[in-house]
Length: 369
Ligand SMILES: *Cc1c(COP(=O)(O)O)cnc(C)c1O
Image (cartoon, rainbow, N blue to C red; front, side):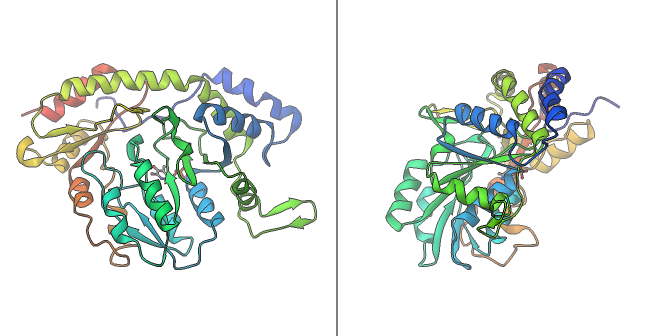
């Protein structure tokens, strides 16, 4: 059996580096509750992401849930969002007692189609929740204009977009807030972890309350809160991985270049296009397979790779709106592009240490007659 290749492989620092970072914990015995490493990582991430404010969380999903909760929308309000995302995005809306209204995506970059947002706005709409899917950037300027016109909040799911900049601006600066995931499978990881970035400092207090039981001091609980604090071991992993992030992204870039070279001019396979004003993070390598032109379906390619020990992923199929828990429950009148792309999309393995030989092997299997 040949070596198995998964869609991703978690980045880890040299073990000595991690041990060095966690040594202080054996002196202090301060393992969580916003300790020194939590604060250190917060400051380092503020710099790296070029954002004003950040709140670290236990994971990306709770970051989403809590930032939505912090906005205190009336129950039953509508949030315009994309079905072409990880299920977490939709769960976070519904678990806040809100109603997702699914908007179509654009066929060129798979982000929410800003031209189709306005027609979905009703008197119940309170927010737009787009996703910078695969690290591609949503139409942030146009979305901002719509939000201002209708007095809506904008929360970006930036789980895929760690380190991405748009026109030189850190991606976490757009909208009212952005949410990052530092899950083990993401470009940057703290084992599990996440963060909310934002400009309004008042949101900091609201998020602090929500992630720490609403506790303000020894005898004061000011708000109803959850527990979503990042612990010190996770923060230590984040600090170590952040030291290597630029190198990791550069290695990913080489792999993506190789993929693109090998897939150049292959009829029926389209690679993700990144516009020139985006500095991308090389987070995922999705291809779109047009069965009629390519001669194999996406599912056939997926199976063929699996038979050869290569585990690509159908991100994002099914659409979140089509999963059993949401199906037929919410409005999704016109999501044709999303439906079509979900049937054709396949994410190929991509991680810093994937060898170029393996990239060639993956592509030769896909192209085999
Ligand atoms: C990973 C991911 C999340 C959830 O993040 P976790 O850290 O795994 O909780 C949310 N949205 C998208 C688009 C993601 O890819």
